[in-house]
Image (cartoon, rainbow, N blue to C red; front, top):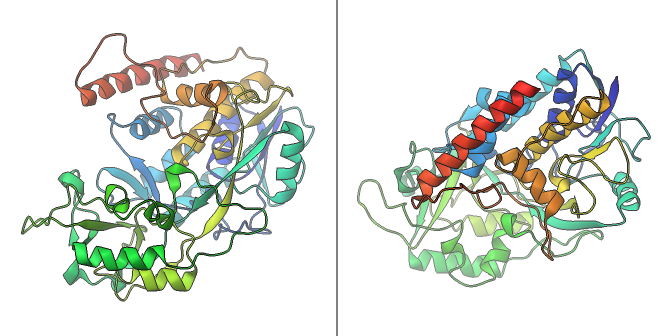
Length: 432
């Protein structure tokens, strides 16, 4: 038995891994390093383009539950993340280079996975195909997908700048996690009301980069450029990425009007990500405006924020809950292009697509991931969304089946939902 997977990102690698675990030979196609998208830099598989964080851990958080389900399903992404984690308080963040290299090592060492470094411009007519080419799918393949689907939408994603640790003035900042949750892994740059006013004025008047011909100015609410958020009101940022609540000074207890957080971006601790500062300001403007943040007056930006096209399907009506394309047997889609949003969600969809596609190819009965599990809830959302404006969705307890009994304490309610989901997942794994 043989399957084809297009795309060597998180979803594609997970799909290939799950197929190989079913003793299916996989041809995995990745166009790097021969061709790079506008936002990719590394030549390895599983590259993280935006943040280096896989978000919160713990069973009181939807992303934390999803990661635990993925671990139970032998996720290649979670293997790499656990191996390459860096300090990030209550979140799971990774050294992005080590993370990508770990995924590449796992995939290339599997004798059933054959990696081909070439661009696929048309969906092949093979018996089993999983398209996981990602939100930055090449123009030629995007056109072919568009012809197949008759419906293709875009939103726009923005990556935050990465700066050197040595350029941070540590005399003006302090280490602390919000509400002291977890260890004090974040560097916090506090702002007085006057300092914030100067920064805000510079930000809203800064010059943005021109969008390419194939792009427009539509943005996804979950990954909004900082300058777009600022344009919604002078205090919008203080209720968003610059929220000061829970970030009082650890020694003096002083409260601030706004706080910019920096998160460690590599294992060595030499690079930091400006949290929530996704942007498409021109490079020179990023340097000028972000230097107004206290502690970053001499910031050294090693990777500027960039704006890039992010492609996704209008999956309701096109895909079913197994991520199978309804109009063609044996064709599956996986990753962010299906309408799941985020690293772990994209990877989880690859796991699901790989399991479902493999079982169908082998003539085995389908497995059902119920919407009481995080992975099942994602499949249910992209297949059954009934609203007017389908947009990519992060995993959250709002799309996971609620408890039959009432639990007033939200934290305890989420914990019980998670424990139920993990028991269901263990039962599913036994059937696999």
